[in-house]
Amino acid sequence: MKKQQTGSLADTFEHALAACRQRAGATGPLTGMAIALSGGLDSSALLHLAHAYARGQGIALHAFHIHHGISPHADAWLAHCEAACAALGVPFEARRVTLERSAKTGTEAAARNSRYAALGQLCREHGVRLLLTAHHQDDQAETVLLQLLRGSGTAGLSGMDAANAAPELLGNPELLMARPLLPASRKQLAAYVAAHAIAYVDDESNADPRFARNALRHQVMPALAQAFPGFQERFARSAQHAQSAQRLLVELATQDLALCLDGDCLDIGKLRLLSTDRCYNLLRHWFGTRALRMPSTAWLAEMLAQLLEARPDAQLLVTHPDCHVRRHRERLFLTPKLAELAGTRDDDDDASPGQGFVWRGEAELAFPAYGGVLYFDQAEEGVDAAWLRGQSLVIDFRKGGERLKLAANRPTKTLKYHYQAFDVPAWERERLPTVGTATQLLFAAGIGMDCHQLSEAAAPRIRLRWISC
Image (cartoon, rainbow, N blue to C red; front, side, top):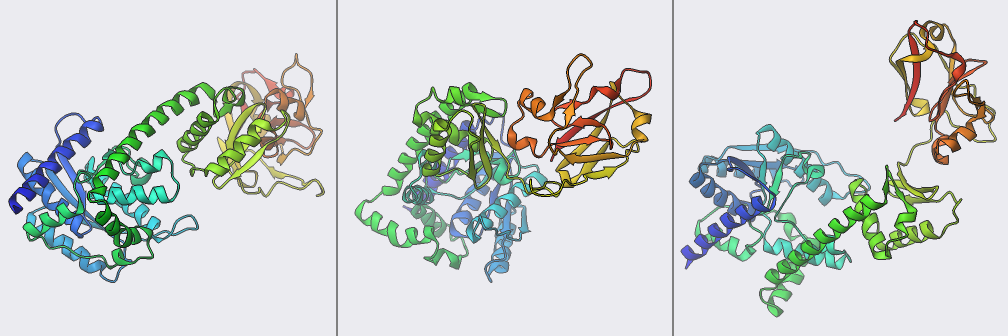
């Protein structure tokens, strides 16, 4: 009986691994792979399954262990993993990481982020492009149930993919992460480990009910198993249905985003042509492409209502934890939250003198107080380089009333007029500096050079250019 169980699990692993690579579009023979080895029951089973498969197929196998240093037993776990790999002849490497906690992430999330980043780095160092993890059917069921309890949509209820690339998590865009044990239950893995007398370690934190997943695993899942035997497999099927639905939603959002995108912003007129649900779907996808945290449904509904109902000339500003959402001339912008610059001032303040400097031929000069870098580009038409070197220059934010003439055949206009003509949003104007002498404005960021000193003479010519950081 045991022989049949272990053989079927090996077949499950082999078929699932082939399906993972096929879904990911992997072509050509598999030459090498790595496993994430914690030393627990699940990853120990994966180690033996992967070793048997790799030996039969002539594939190089590596095992990587991440030492978080959280548990007092962490050193013992590392030693156990190293010994287990040595017994099988599997190349092993461990990496110690330091958790970087923040207001956004707790201990669990910090450990997860540091673990996957280290695994991605190890794979890159060893030239491995396929990483296997030991997630199984019960893990999938727990994930789906957790997301359901959090009120997640189809993206959350999709659970874990059998295979996916996660460059933002692994820091390695060439790495594929596969979960070939997803079709197998924890019970099957336990039977496999017992049949092969595989030693493993037990992480004491897995019994701590303060962690939501542990509370589900030890208190809720046993009750579900008693009332609904085999529920894990049905949850896994539901996750597959949600994955299919999510792929369709992403496909629709990609099409809608292409329709509404205008450079880096959204055309609100085109957004109004979509149903509310399609707007939500598009906006979530847009936030995802910008690597921004997904907003709640309530926040999204409030933002969309303000966006579509505000009067046309309103300077709409909605604050997201990671950015600002702004509207300007029927376009929607996602702008970074910028710290106050040292050079800015309130209207009640006395006019600041700006920051004086002398150009000595540098290709660029950084001005942190003004939030960017001033470039000095060689050009056919520009300011005489020798003349520019002899000037005492000043960089400053506009005070109001400054005027600029862009070309000899064009009138002199205020910076406000030029900003409107160049469609520079109001929030950007306050952070775009000007450069000039004590008596003459030479350059305004976002607009261009004043024409009075421009020439096409044979002498080296310079044009100024500003890039905000």
